[in-house]
Structure formats: C-alpha cells, structure tokens
Length: 252
Image (cartoon, rainbow, N blue to C red; front, side):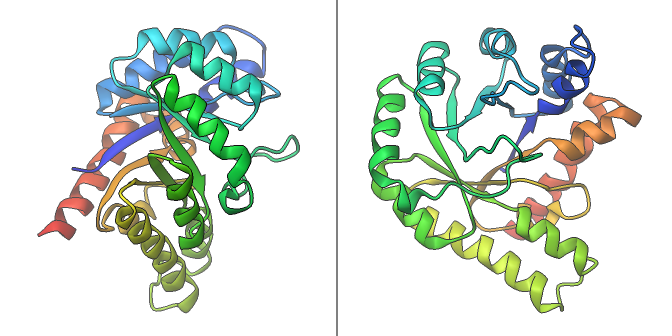
C-alpha cells in the first residue's frame, strides 16, 4: 500500500518568522501521525532557514513513524545524520538563493563524491535516498553508486498539470507523467525503492499515486497550507485518503 511522508518544514518557516517557539514542528509531526502519516520529512538546510538542529534532535527521539532527513551532500550534514541516525537520509541539491529545491541531484556527474557519502551513511546504519529529476539515466547512476531509494522530482509534472488544467490529452502533461513513470520503472528494475515528491497537492496527486510500484510520496507545502484551515490531522487524513484510493483503483 502506498505511504505518505509529511514534510513539516513550513511549520518551522512560520515559527522562524518571529524566531519564537510556535508553531512547534514536533507537535505538528505528532498531529500528522494521528492523521495517518507513515513518515515525517524535514530538510535541515545549510542556512537553517526553517528547520533547526534542535528540531531534528527532538524528532529523532520523538516520532513514532519513520523520519526522513533531507540534506545537502556536505561533510557537516553527513556528520549530523550519522550522529542522529534518522531512518532515512535523502541527499538533495541545495542553493542559498532558491525558495525551495529547484531540481534533482545530478548523480551521474557526481558519482565519485556521492559514492563516498553513500558509503558513510550506510555504514552509520541509514537508508540512503537520492532526490533525482525524472530521468532514467540518473536512476541508473544512483543504482551504480549504491543508493537504496530514489525519489523522483515531480515539480515539472506539477507545473505541467497546472498549465494544462489537468487535461491529460495535452501533450505537455502526458509526457511529464510518462517521464516520472519511466524513471520509476528504471528505479524498480534496479532493485531500489521508488518514491516521488515535490509540488504535489490535492488536485494533482492521484495520477502519481496510481503509478506502478510507487512506494511513498513526500508532500509538505500543500498539507501545511490546508492545515491552516482544517488542522494538520485532517489535512493529512484527506491527502492520505486520495492517495490510497488512487493506488487501490490502479491495482484492481
């Protein structure tokens, strides 16, 4: 059955606007669990713009589901992840000026550097994931290096969905979904776990959740945004319901 990892970064974004103590990401994680989240995701950025070190420390010892730590492939982050031991370490590209992650990790061009990072994280007992663009060549490179999981960047798909009004008769949208699907097939064929995420929301998530072999979706902004109106628990429940229904329908 497909699973949902809830990214709570933007709960911390609101808190950091006042450098205060609320809203508390750990409490948000607990509410997400009660809504049906199978995992919690946070991105500890180098500039600490939202999630802070103490948040990750509290979450590592305070959640009842999997904790996925998104991070840049730097010595500092490798050291932090190896010490705190979240369940999964996901390597992502990171730019100081970007609002959010703008693309996938270029695994194919960084084989030597990433190979060492993957070995260190696996030696620390972590499952290691790569956030990649919808490109089978990147999935093949990730398999060669030794990643356990590939999360396919669904941002281009989400942009196409919005531009085409969700009309899959439009070539731009059908091709964007096909790229995610073909990359997923490569991931599965290489024996890795197929996850996906970025810019997924309550309108565009169903076709992604219906892809063959997909294991987990990581969704943050849409859920936190809806939680402003209905609460975190209910926002997670609604997203999980859409995902499970789409996954189950595709499996029939």
